[in-house]
Image 1: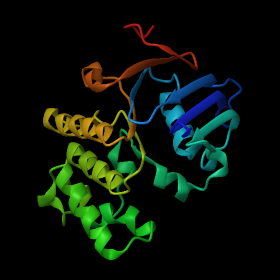
Image 2: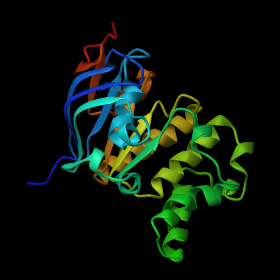
Image 3: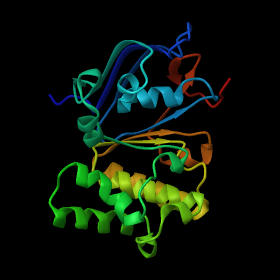
Length: 230
């Protein structure tokens, strides 16, 4: 039997210098091809949970971590960040934290180049990714000159170029206009059909119509969402 893409067992975490845990006994299994939405008030640990899944915790942020986070049955704490990046792609809320190359083309190429792919394959991935988000005309632009929504679409293209099995959207549509949201939601639905596993952290409930399941993160614990945050 194949391991689930994401399995979390009795996860507790507190940031360095903090006595209280922000995550308090999280248990979660996410299936292949599932779109899971996680909602909750600010400060309840939604981004922290994403950091645990993508390896930022414990590989970048230390703190106190207990429990297990498994990707396809393998503990995240035992995987290096390069290996995790080939499994999990993340689009965060602020695109400026993920853009650092002089051109859009370089930005999208960065991930595949670090996977040491052949140049022809890198070129194909750049073309496919930029076409998917409808930003072909900006391929040679400096990302810093783009709008917030355009930047987010470039980040999405960069993540798609890695062809990861798991994709996390951490309030990724917060700075995107209506058309940009439509593009991203359509792409998420397509990725689901391709068997990708999706986690959406959202505050805008109009974006949750594509989710298979919605969970509420409240007081450090996950529970079934029943239509209210408090």
